[in-house]
Length: 387
Image 1 (tube, rainbow, N blue to C red):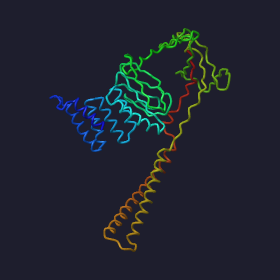
Image 2 (cartoon, one colour):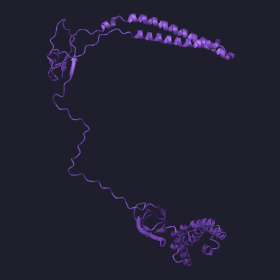
Image 3 (cartoon, one colour):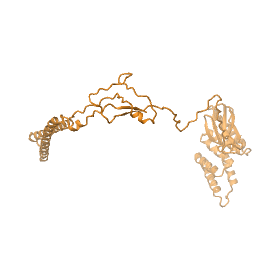
Image 4 (cartoon, rainbow, N blue to C red):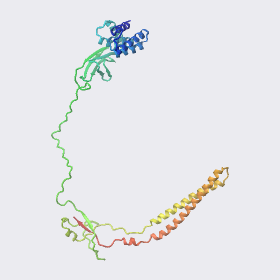
């Protein structure tokens, strides 16, 4: 059996007794011994796991053939084909090349029956990542089962230039491509980014206006008119009619022309001009506290009615028919007593507040001396001053 011969070859290469201190080599040989026994016992899944463990510890080309044989036994034909081709890639002229070619032909026939063939990608140096648009990315050696057609394979490796290569897949057999990567590129194996170029401004575009954070200077001259109403201290004689100034419209005062700010004497000696102001409302006596007292009276009456109804309800329940415990009777009695007390308090407050409201209604109606003194004195019309 070929797998046993390969195992024997591995044993001879590793040596019957591994060098002292090489624990990794001893561990790999132990995995191979377990895999050989499992394969003979037809425990192919166990043998596959042990061969793969040995390959991870001490990679050897001929272990790919054993891995492929295990995959073939468990009907994993794509994985078996991948292992056989990896074996020939790492050992181009093995002694069992004819048998390996026959195994590859068998696996290709299995895939052909499903309408696909396998594409395997290698890279030099190894360790790169291969990808096909719409098919995903895989570490090299990477394999895909594809329908016939032409595909673009992208291979990248940090420190090397990313390379793209077209590959044609046919139904005749599996396809293989090996990509040699050139040193260079960015840290991810990609071309260095291009420096962005800022487009120049069109020549006919006007320059942007400069923004000055300072406000514009104030120009000399008349910048506006400010009107101040001043009431003179000298009262006018009573019953002396004043001649109103000519108006351009209803209730529109005619202001004096603007004067220089320094001419204060001329400003205060100018004739008085009345302003169209609304006369102040005549103070009238309010009845605020009358309404407050009335509101308290209404609230007290409402509280008295509420607690009165509660007391009557408790009393009716206490004297009504039905069996009740002593605790229930005590509770009803207490509620009737307290509700009656609160009702009396509410009625008393309502009566007192009602009397107070009547008294306040009579008192607040008359104008007070303070209101009379607050009336505006007839000091004449205000003067309009224009700056």
